[in-house]
Image (tube, rainbow, N blue to C red; front, side, top):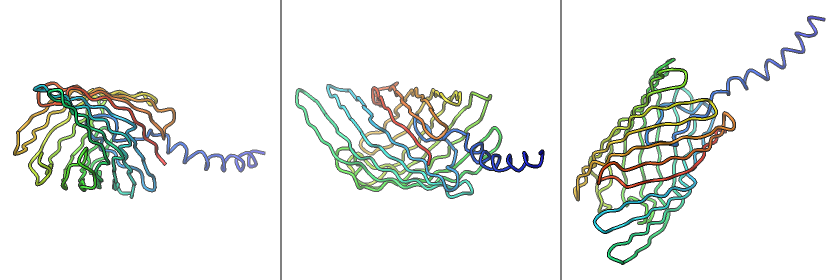
Length: 261
């Protein structure tokens, strides 16, 4: 009888084992200002979608409202801590008002391609390198107008079972304001994240040094984001970024989701 029970139990264990291995929650790039160092598992795909975001920038009698919808990113795990990334923004609208005059533009955004390589994956420390290039496929409204490239080195240090410290330094060849040519842009995002399995929240501070020939800026941002996971493979998230100096946009609100397949 015991042998029969064991024979019946073995198939159940075989079925349950993969499910237990997949209990770790999906690790998405969104939401937030920084970038996590986690890599998508081999043979899995993480799809991320920014449903809508609204950004307000005011200064010197000018007000600019930017709405972006369908900001998509696909991350494909290749194994060995490597993933490839492809992103595209489906629609953007910019409304600019100055001295009583209003102008509007809308169109699609640029395509981005990238590779993430995880270098360290320990019990408490994770570190990766991400190389990403943006191709000028978008229109004038939200497209950059020329190609750009960036390098990110995200780091995550687990402080407790719930809290973690995150750091994302970056350097980029960013497109000039006149949409032709590139300049040096470098920055740092630091934050603390609390993860309770089904719910999570992150508080971040970001500083950037944008050495555009037209005007050198150092925007400073405070970000608060969070989300809910109804299942380990799916999350719904939202966030708010506040500008802390005159070089930064005043406010950005956004909502989106991520799904692991």
